[in-house]
Length: 145
Image 1 (spheres, rainbow, N blue to C red):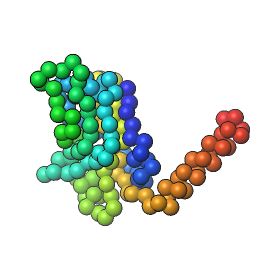
Image 2 (cartoon, one colour):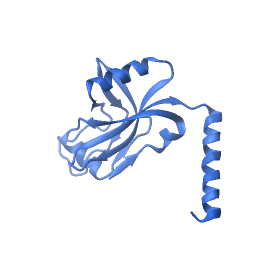
Image 3 (spheres, rainbow, N blue to C red):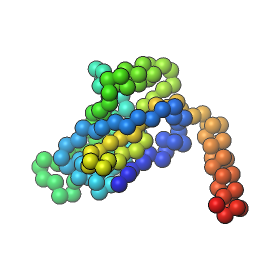
């Protein structure tokens, strides 16, 4: 199971990506395993030296009881201290953001999130990306690749 944020690749240039662990409640992991999450307007933010993901919507578990989780709560991301300091220094520079790219369950059954350190694209960059993608598609179609 893998959920990806396809819109992020259209909106940002990514310099580096990191794999971070997610701190979740019991019903959140059950909803993730069924693919009930949305990346719309989600972003990462530092608070007192710790990294959190905001606006990540994980739907309530259908069979949950009164212990069900809040769908839009902020969730802590787990990274090494060295990586956290590096990312925090980069985000202080103008134009850099940390954006969630993928959520997946690893072979041990733990929820992981791929985050990217990126800079926003301008409109002309987005148009160039679309043209390149269409040209690649046409070449593949022509040569049957």
